[in-house]
Image 1 (cartoon, rainbow, N blue to C red):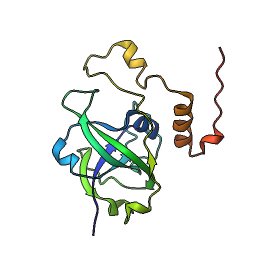
Image 2 (cartoon, rainbow, N blue to C red):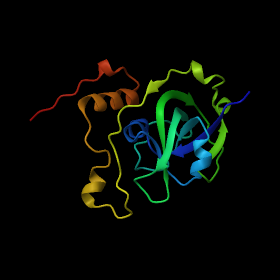
Image 3 (spheres, one colour):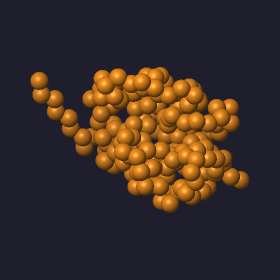
Image 4 (tube, helix red, strand yellow):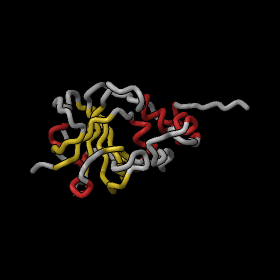
Length: 173
Protein backbone atom coordinates (compact mmCIF):
# COMPACT_ATOMS: atom_id res chain seq x y z
CA UNK A 1 0.00 0.00 0.00
CA UNK A 2 1.41 3.40 -0.92
CA UNK A 3 1.32 6.55 1.18
CA UNK A 4 0.26 9.62 -0.82
CA UNK A 5 2.08 12.91 -0.25
CA UNK A 6 2.40 16.44 -1.48
CA UNK A 7 5.83 17.18 -3.04
CA UNK A 8 7.30 20.69 -3.34
CA UNK A 9 10.45 21.91 -5.09
CA UNK A 10 11.66 24.62 -2.72
CA UNK A 11 14.49 27.12 -2.70
CA UNK A 12 14.18 27.43 1.06
CA UNK A 13 16.64 25.59 3.24
CA UNK A 14 15.98 23.63 6.40
CA UNK A 15 16.49 26.54 8.80
CA UNK A 16 14.05 28.73 6.92
CA UNK A 17 11.40 26.00 6.69
CA UNK A 18 11.71 25.46 10.44
CA UNK A 19 11.57 29.18 11.23
CA UNK A 20 8.45 29.62 9.08
CA UNK A 21 6.64 26.56 10.43
CA UNK A 22 6.57 24.71 7.13
CA UNK A 23 6.78 25.34 3.40
CA UNK A 24 5.40 28.37 1.56
CA UNK A 25 4.30 30.38 -0.53
CA UNK A 26 2.61 27.93 -2.83
CA UNK A 27 -0.09 28.46 -5.42
CA UNK A 28 -2.18 25.32 -4.98
CA UNK A 29 -5.65 24.04 -4.28
CA UNK A 30 -5.91 24.38 -0.51
CA UNK A 31 -8.60 21.74 -0.11
CA UNK A 32 -6.65 19.17 -2.14
CA UNK A 33 -3.39 19.85 -0.31
CA UNK A 34 -5.07 19.62 3.11
CA UNK A 35 -6.19 16.04 2.33
CA UNK A 36 -2.58 14.85 2.48
CA UNK A 37 -0.80 13.86 5.67
CA UNK A 38 2.75 14.43 4.42
CA UNK A 39 4.73 16.98 2.42
CA UNK A 40 8.12 16.09 0.93
CA UNK A 41 10.50 19.02 0.39
CA UNK A 42 12.94 18.75 -2.52
CA UNK A 43 15.79 21.28 -2.73
CA UNK A 44 15.96 23.77 -5.58
CA UNK A 45 19.38 25.43 -5.71
CA UNK A 46 18.54 27.50 -8.79
CA UNK A 47 17.31 30.36 -6.59
CA UNK A 48 19.51 32.44 -4.32
CA UNK A 49 17.07 33.92 -1.83
CA UNK A 50 15.86 31.01 0.29
CA UNK A 51 18.91 29.76 2.15
CA UNK A 52 19.10 26.47 0.25
CA UNK A 53 21.46 24.16 2.13
CA UNK A 54 21.05 20.73 0.53
CA UNK A 55 22.11 19.24 -2.78
CA UNK A 56 20.04 20.25 -5.82
CA UNK A 57 17.03 17.97 -6.39
CA UNK A 58 17.59 16.03 -3.14
CA UNK A 59 14.49 15.32 -1.08
CA UNK A 60 15.64 16.48 2.36
CA UNK A 61 12.64 16.83 4.64
CA UNK A 62 9.23 15.29 5.16
CA UNK A 63 6.73 17.34 7.10
CA UNK A 64 3.64 15.95 8.73
CA UNK A 65 0.97 18.36 7.50
CA UNK A 66 -0.82 20.11 10.33
CA UNK A 67 -2.78 22.62 8.28
CA UNK A 68 -2.75 24.55 5.01
CA UNK A 69 -3.26 28.27 5.64
CA UNK A 70 -3.05 31.50 3.70
CA UNK A 71 0.51 32.72 3.38
CA UNK A 72 1.30 36.09 4.92
CA UNK A 73 4.11 36.37 2.37
CA UNK A 74 2.04 36.59 -0.79
CA UNK A 75 -1.64 36.97 -1.68
CA UNK A 76 -3.41 33.93 -3.13
CA UNK A 77 -0.66 31.59 -1.89
CA UNK A 78 -0.52 29.06 0.92
CA UNK A 79 1.70 27.95 3.76
CA UNK A 80 1.81 24.22 4.45
CA UNK A 81 2.25 24.10 8.22
CA UNK A 82 4.04 21.09 9.67
CA UNK A 83 3.35 19.62 13.12
CA UNK A 84 6.61 17.67 12.98
CA UNK A 85 9.32 16.84 10.50
CA UNK A 86 11.83 14.15 9.62
CA UNK A 87 15.08 14.57 7.73
CA UNK A 88 15.76 12.39 4.71
CA UNK A 89 18.34 12.40 1.93
CA UNK A 90 17.02 11.05 -1.33
CA UNK A 91 18.92 12.18 -4.48
CA UNK A 92 17.41 12.79 -7.91
CA UNK A 93 14.01 13.35 -6.37
CA UNK A 94 12.63 15.82 -8.90
CA UNK A 95 11.52 14.55 -12.34
CA UNK A 96 12.08 17.91 -14.05
CA UNK A 97 8.51 19.16 -13.99
CA UNK A 98 7.90 22.88 -14.48
CA UNK A 99 5.28 23.16 -11.75
CA UNK A 100 7.02 23.16 -8.32
CA UNK A 101 4.09 21.39 -6.64
CA UNK A 102 3.05 17.84 -7.40
CA UNK A 103 1.46 14.84 -5.78
CA UNK A 104 3.33 11.59 -5.23
CA UNK A 105 3.96 8.84 -2.70
CA UNK A 106 6.43 8.47 0.15
CA UNK A 107 7.67 5.26 -1.44
CA UNK A 108 9.15 7.33 -4.30
CA UNK A 109 11.54 8.74 -1.68
CA UNK A 110 12.49 5.43 -0.12
CA UNK A 111 10.00 5.67 2.74
CA UNK A 112 7.90 2.52 2.98
CA UNK A 113 6.75 3.10 6.56
CA UNK A 114 6.62 6.70 7.87
CA UNK A 115 6.48 5.46 11.48
CA UNK A 116 10.11 4.34 11.14
CA UNK A 117 11.32 7.91 10.52
CA UNK A 118 12.84 10.00 13.32
CA UNK A 119 10.15 12.63 13.79
CA UNK A 120 10.99 15.88 15.54
CA UNK A 121 8.52 18.52 16.74
CA UNK A 122 8.50 21.78 14.81
CA UNK A 123 10.13 24.64 16.69
CA UNK A 124 8.14 27.82 17.39
CA UNK A 125 7.55 29.97 14.31
CA UNK A 126 9.99 32.87 14.30
CA UNK A 127 9.64 34.26 10.77
CA UNK A 128 6.47 35.75 9.37
CA UNK A 129 6.60 37.63 6.10
CA UNK A 130 4.17 40.52 5.69
CA UNK A 131 1.20 40.08 3.38
CA UNK A 132 2.29 42.67 0.87
CA UNK A 133 3.66 42.72 -2.62
CA UNK A 134 5.52 45.91 -1.69
CA UNK A 135 8.07 45.10 1.02
CA UNK A 136 9.92 47.95 2.61
CA UNK A 137 13.71 47.95 2.70
CA UNK A 138 13.62 47.20 6.44
CA UNK A 139 11.27 44.24 5.92
CA UNK A 140 13.55 42.86 3.22
CA UNK A 141 16.51 42.96 5.60
CA UNK A 142 14.62 41.23 8.42
CA UNK A 143 13.15 38.24 6.58
CA UNK A 144 13.60 35.80 9.45
CA UNK A 145 12.65 38.03 12.39
CA UNK A 146 14.49 37.87 15.69
CA UNK A 147 15.77 34.46 16.79
CA UNK A 148 16.48 33.26 20.28
CA UNK A 149 19.91 31.78 20.93
CA UNK A 150 18.32 28.31 21.24
CA UNK A 151 16.52 28.68 17.89
CA UNK A 152 19.73 29.84 16.22
CA UNK A 153 21.61 26.86 17.68
CA UNK A 154 18.89 24.48 16.50
CA UNK A 155 18.92 25.91 12.98
CA UNK A 156 22.71 25.88 12.74
CA UNK A 157 22.92 22.33 14.08
CA UNK A 158 20.33 21.15 11.56
CA UNK A 159 22.00 22.94 8.66
CA UNK A 160 25.49 21.72 9.58
CA UNK A 161 24.41 18.21 10.50
CA UNK A 162 25.87 18.36 14.00
CA UNK A 163 24.25 18.04 17.45
CA UNK A 164 23.08 21.25 19.12
CA UNK A 165 25.63 20.64 21.88
CA UNK A 166 28.39 21.23 19.27
CA UNK A 167 27.17 24.77 18.61
CA UNK A 168 28.48 27.64 20.75
CA UNK A 169 27.27 31.18 20.19
CA UNK A 170 29.08 34.18 21.64
CA UNK A 171 27.46 37.59 21.85
CA UNK A 172 29.60 40.66 22.54
CA UNK A 173 28.02 43.95 23.54
